[in-house]
Length: 254
Image (cartoon, rainbow, N blue to C red; front, side, top):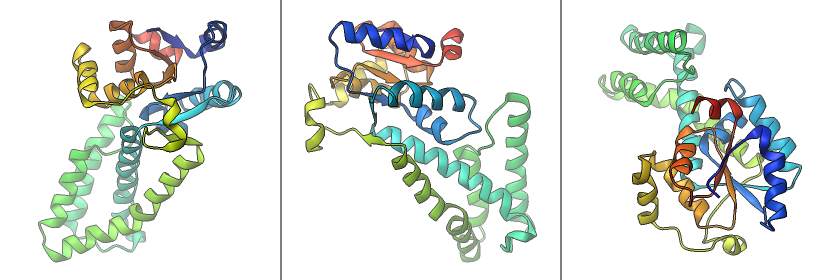
C-alpha cells in the first residue's frame, strides 16, 4: 500500500489488487473529483469523467463521498452561483434595482476576479472574501440592502443550489457513514478525530484531505480517487496509508 497511481496505470493496478485477493468494492472520491465531474469548464473534466465511466463504473466499483467532501462540493457551487448571479444582477435586464454604490461593489470585486482569471488562469468564481465584501455593501444600507441581497439569493442561489445537490445524487455517489446499516460491513474501525489530526500533522496536509484519508483507512476500500496533490504527498510521506489514484499530469507536477 501507499502508492500514488496514475489514471493510465489503473488497469494494471486493479489487476494486481485482484491477484492479491484484495476486494475492490468501492472507492472514495475527493471533493475536487466530484466538482470536476459536474463542472465542465474544469481542466480535468473530460479525463476524470471518462476515467470514472470507463474504469470505475465498468468494473462496478461503488463511489463514495464523505460529509466534508459533500460540504466542499456545495460550497464551490454556492460561490459559483453567487458569482454568476451577482454579475447578472448589475445589468438592467435582471429586473433587480441596485444602487450605483452596490453595482460598484460588485464591479470592483469582478475586476479583481477578472485579473485573476486573465493572469493566473483562475476559475471564474469569487472567493469567500470577495462575496463577503459585496454582501457587506448591501447590509450597510440597512433593511433595503438586506432585502435586495435576499432577493439575489432567492433568484440566483436558492433553487439552483438544491438542483446541484440533486445533481450530486445523480452521480450515484453514496455518502459513506458507519451509522448506515447497509454500510457497516465496509468499516473496519471507528473514525476518530484524533487519527485525522495525526494524518494532518504528519506532513501538514489540509484537514479536509486528512479526513478523507482517515475515512479510507477505517474501511475495507483500497484506494481513493483525487485531484489534490496534498493527498499524494500524504501517501508519499506515509507508506502505511492506502493508495490514491490521480490524473497523470498532476503526478508529473509533484
